[in-house]
Every structure is written in C-alpha cells, then in structure tokens.
Amino acid sequence: EEGAYAFDIGEAVVSRYLWQKWIPRIDRLILSHADQDHAGGIPAVIKNFSVLGLGYYQNKPDPILGGVLKIAKERHVPARIFHAGMEERIGPVLVRVLHPRADSAFDTSNENSIVLHFSYRGFSALLTGDLEKAGERAFLEQTPNLRSRLLKVAHHGSRSGTSHALLARVQPRWAIVSAGRNNPFGHPSREVMARLRHHGAQSFLTTDKGAITFETDGNRYSIKSHVWGVLEQGDIG
Image 1 (cartoon, rainbow, N blue to C red):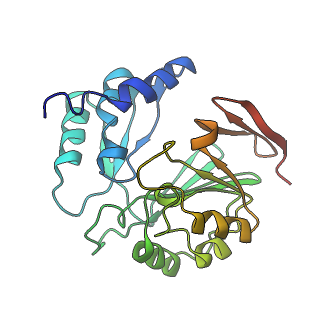
Image 2 (cartoon, helix red, strand yellow):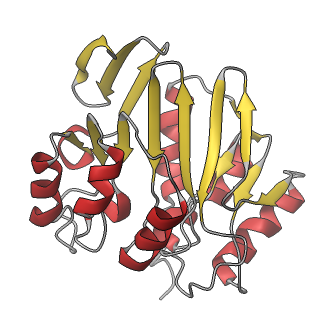
C-alpha cells in the first residue's frame, strides 16, 4: 500500500536525535543485521551525515541489505563485512567482533546478528543485536571472556534470548532494553526481566525513559535519559 512505510525512523528519529546532539559525523555505522526495524533507517542516516565506514554481515542475498549497500556505494561510504575474530583499537578503546563466524551456517538474520564488545579502562559493554537461542549458544561456546559492565539486551528483551547461561558469563551491572512503548510483541518479556533481576543487573528500558546514553571516561560514568535527564552517575568501581 502506497504510503504505508512513509514514516522513516532514520529521518524522523535517529537523524533528529543526532542533530540535536550536534553530531555531524559518524565514524562507524554498524548494522547489527538486515531486518527492517534495524536497517530501515540507515539510508537516511547515510544521506544526512558524513559516515566514514559501514560494517555489516552477509552470508546470503538480502534485498534490505542490498539497498543499504547501494546507497553506501553512491555516497562513497567504505563498507566491509564484520565477523568473529576481528578487532580494532580506536585510541584507548578496544572493539572486538564476537559473532557471527565468517562461515556462519545460520539462516536467519537474527541469529547472524553482529555482536560487539567494547572495553575502555574500567568499562566494558556487550551489544548483542537480535541474537536468539541458537546463535547465543554458538556465541557462548566460541567466546571465552564475556565479562561486561553494560549489556545491550538482545532482541528488545524477547524471551528467545538473554538466557541464564549468558547472564552468568557476562555478569552485567547495567542492562539496556530497547523496545517501543506498547509494542505489539509484548517486549520486553517478563521472563527476561526476571532473569536480569536474578543476576543482579540494573535495567533501563527505552519504553519508560526514551533514548538512553551511557557516558564514561573509563573511571566515572553517567547514565542519561532523553526524557528524564541524568538517571545515575558515579564511579565504575
């Protein structure tokens, strides 16, 4: 139906947020996976900002990803495939790609979500895309050290991910759950929220707080809400 996808989250939400923060340039734009709710806004962001590099994963043809790569090429944005084993130091920050393997046999885009680990002085973060059960199991088997202060909870808090096994390995102090308010899927699930409480993680939900930012110098930190301002600050410890 014409006009059904007229709302462009990349234009209406992400770009406006970045403009408000006076961010003119994006050093790395990493597409966790090519589902519409993750990739749909990327073309607008590439058009509106100076993007220095695009990271993605692909093990089969995908029309949504194809559209993203076409616009990246038109805008002369270098694009490269990310896979487990890659790492890069950006100043004092170490960025590791933990999933998927270069030869991933998973069929679904969720299970092939790019998983990233950031470490900087006393701070660390794990970003898990929309990883589900099978991908999570494979990822746990191939990755020895997962301890992270901050966890971006997988798949909007769906019960299909964020297992007790994962949380026991990561031991997060904080967990960020990104989900739309009153979404039709019931995200985040009560099961995942209970697992996070069981493992002692303090959760922050975008359903309540809007966009959430975590700022740190590696020793001190500040967690801010786009809606409510500073939520918590202190020493990482």
